[in-house]
Image (cartoon, rainbow, N blue to C red):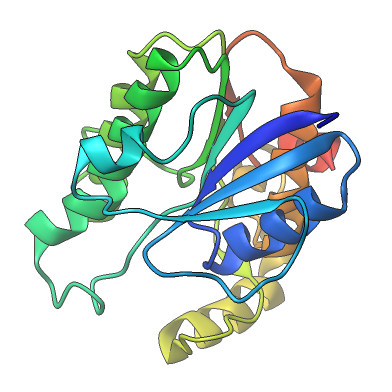
Length: 222
């Protein structure tokens, strides 16, 4: 099979589902392995859907044999884990860290994952502190090409999970977007479609080292 092999985790989420569609349409990728908790209903000759127990690193190890790039778009919410911070960490921290470790074991040279603007291990905000921990954990693995995508508020329609607070927040952020310039540009709301396109662009750019991608860099990559 010609073309690169991509592995994607989080392919059912807002950004991940858009990225999966782009990968399947792009001739640069001959095979796309989607790691999911349940079987997908998307029929495509390039798609290999593997059901994985993300709580078990051995299950992740068995899910693919080799790849050129790994995309990680996983993430949960306080609502889904009912405020359980330990459960939140299992999704947002453990999955990227385990997936990154397995990727290195299998010779993958490029890892691209979604974090958040403001990620910082010293933050008083649980979410931003956790994202900072994720960034540190994956950065320490030593990938040849690592892209950390840091969007601000995502603009886009979620297929399964309507969030009133997020919907209102998007409207407020869009109306106030005129204030985002200079150092504040990184907080500009970004379309989920553009985040997915930037991740695809990063996979083709293959810039070595640890690359922190915020709003303006995302716009460069799309």
